[in-house]
Amino acid sequence: RPVFASVVNLLLIIFGIVSFSMLSLREYPDIDPPIVSINTNYPGASANIVETRITQLLEDRISGIEGIKNITSTSRNGRSDITIEFELSRDIDAASNDVRERVSRALNNLPDQADPPEVSKSNSDEQPVMWFNLRSTNLNTMELTDYAERYLVDRLSIVNGVARVRIGG
Image (tube, rainbow, N blue to C red; front, side, top):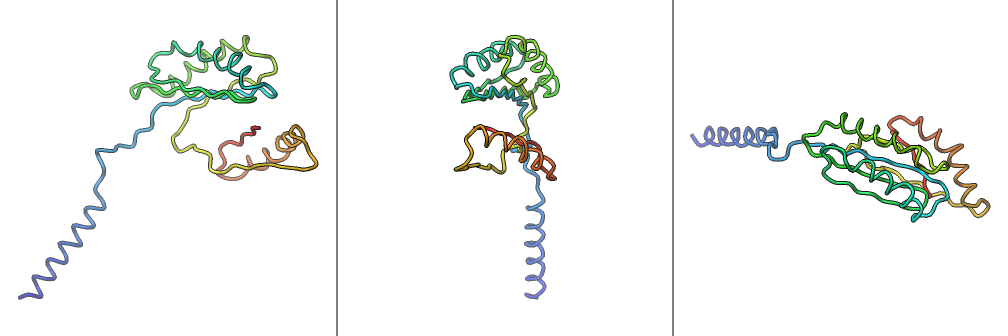
């Protein structure tokens, strides 16, 4: 009975394909490493000033926190970004609270013109999705920044699914 054997083989193949697609991957578990970010704006400051007066100061304050695996920082014109990666065993909520506490102790040592640092728990899915570049022949950089802060930030923030709107430049 070749027809019966062919049908049974076909059913076994289909069952195998469906079963294979439903297998979970145990070698690659969904791990979200505990990462905390500190972002500080210092409008009008050069990268060197941001590095010495904000980034280094904050790095020194947070370097003694328990469970830190890696600290990465970037200083550019008007902005300091510090990323702290903790060991996988460290609770992200406790780690971010420790970072907030250390940053709040350093607030008095930061320049008065600098915005207060934003401490946030990072998610690997939080990568920027869209960038806007504003350009004008009539407005200078300060006027474009003012326009973006007054009109674009509020309008883009209320769009469903937008977590954060940042202005830089």
